[in-house]
Image 1 (cartoon, helix red, strand yellow):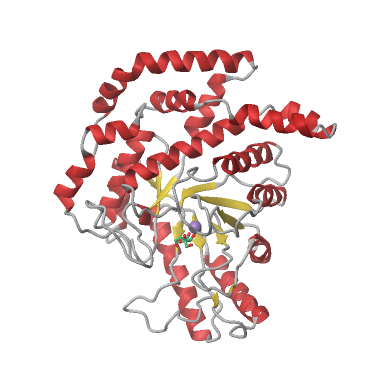
Image 2 (spheres, protein in one colour):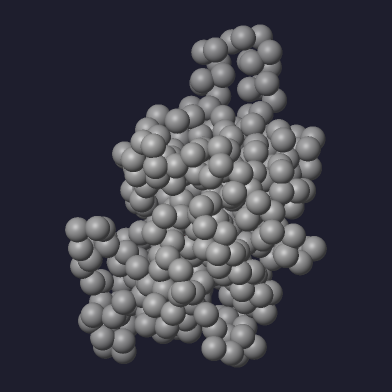
Length: 427
Ligand code: PSV
Ligand code: MN
């Protein structure tokens, strides 16, 4: 289901005069504060976030799943939905595939199809947290950490196959998230499990093409509730450091215990040049996978503040980061939810870009705690939405993407085309 450029232009023209007035007022304010508005717009336009192929339908919870209707039934339909989101927002120019859920039948054709939607392939994700029907050995008791060398070999071979598929699509990185761990005390020898995981990861790392990166996620619990092998950023960093220069830690916002200072983790990893990428979502309690910015928008801003400042003073040459939304949709239309997330991400980026870093440094150097806080609040409390809209409009996107999406009854049309009870994920 595609939306035409002209339809977006027509929709924008209805809101143009109101938008221009808001944007000009903001432009005036920012310019008076010495901020280079045109540069800010370019930085916002350049910020692109990958959409995971599994986020385009209802994820559900372990208590059930309520169909959204019109969910994509195959890889092409997933790419087409990302193409639609990108056309509306001009901020989601790539898709991140999960293998084996999304194995292309014909890579060249899939590539060409994606290209026709303006979409490229971001990191590929392996899956050793589930058993597949054609699989010889089970991951019930772990994969890369398993006590049985044959299970580990199978999991390593799967990751290698994922790299091959990624290569055929132009991906340049592999993200590994492991469910490996233990559900009860005594079940696992922590040291041995970690050592076996490192050995497996090294094998995967050494298989990667020389221009690829390995991203290692961490998560403190779930589905294992007593321990996970890669429980925190320190463990991920340790594994990445042991694997080599092209292995990095990936921060998923939902993979922290409540109140963890994620911005500090981000800062430390950039300092070591080991921050590889980000999975955006939001949460109240655990890995809730909610819309980005829906629960803790100030935390998101503080994280971006570290990202912007850290990448500017990037002494360790941390490479450019891989950005992805990793959310799950139970109630809202996934396309609308993803549009909201994209907006929240760009807004936090913009807020961080307008922080007066010079004054902040002075305040810090003088231990002026009040002023440091005031500087952050000044940026956070400036309504920068007109700037985000202007960046989007100039790139050819919609001033109000959700209004256009609803105005064209796209979900209704998708339901007509695909049916009411389709399933997008392999879960
Ligand atoms: C599970 O927590 C998870 O959200 C991980 O973050 C992965 O990135 C994703 O699922 C897909 O495997
Ligand atoms: Mn994730």
